[in-house]
Image 1 (tube, rainbow, N blue to C red):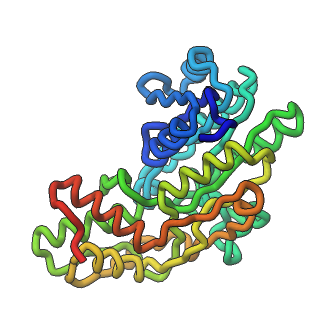
Image 2 (image 1 turned 30 degrees about the vertical axis):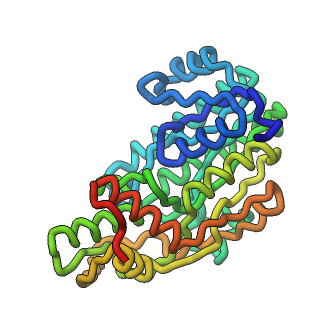
Image 3 (image 1 turned 120 degrees about the vertical axis):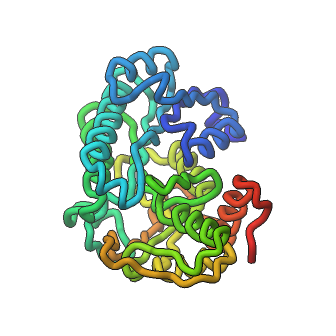
Length: 318
C-alpha cells in the first residue's frame, strides 16, 4: 500500500470498462477511496451531470478514461460520434474539475493521436508532425485536445494535469463484440468460433503488413497508477511495451494458441489502418518508473484462456 493513496478520494471515469476496472482494483488495493459510477448515473456529455458528479463525489483526483472506442470498422461507421462524444466528455470534465478545485487531473489519451506516418519508434516530440491515420483521426484528435487543454490550463491557471497515451491494450475482460472490438479480441473470437464450427478458413481485414504494439491491460493499469502518483508535467507520455508485431504474425500466433488450423484469407478491399506502430517508452521509465512486465505470448495465452472459459470451453488449446 502506498502512503500517497491512503484515503485519497479518486473519481475514475470509465471505471467499469476494460482498463478502468483494473485501475480501480489497483487503487483500492493501495488504500484509495475510489468512485466509479457508470454513465447511467452521470452522462459526461451533459455538463450539468458532470457538475453534479463533482459536487456529489468531491474527488481530490480525477482519472479520465471514459471514452467511446472501437476498431477500424466502428470508427469508419460512426466518426462523428467518436469525435463529438470523446471531445465533449473530456473538455467539459477537465474544465469543471479545474473549477471544482480538483487537485490533479489524469487524462488518458491514445496513440491514435500520432500522425499517420511517424518515424519508428514513435517519440512524443513527433506528436504534432502530421495528421492522424484517417480511419481513426476523429477519435484521436478528440482525445488529443486534452493535451492542449492540459498545457493551456497549467500555463494560465497552474492546474496540475497530466496526459498519457497507452498503446493498443489486450487482456481478460476485453470487448469481444465483433461490431466494436479491437483487433486481438476480434481475431480470438474468429478463431475460436471457426474452430467450434469446423470452418476451414477465416477472413482477416487488410493484407497483414501493418505492425502494432500491444500492452497487457494489467501493465497499463499499473502505468496509469504510477503516472497519477508521480507525474506532474503536461508533457505527453507514451505507455507501451516497446514490442512490435505484424498483423500477419499476430493472426498466425492467435491461430496457433487457439488451436485453429484452417487457412487465413486476407480481404485486401478492407483498410490496413496505420502502417506501423511502435512506441519509444523511455519517457515513462525515466519520469515515473514504468516498464511493462508481461511477455506478449503469455498475455495472449491468458486472454484466450479467459475468453474460452467465459464460453464454458474450459481451457485454451495449444
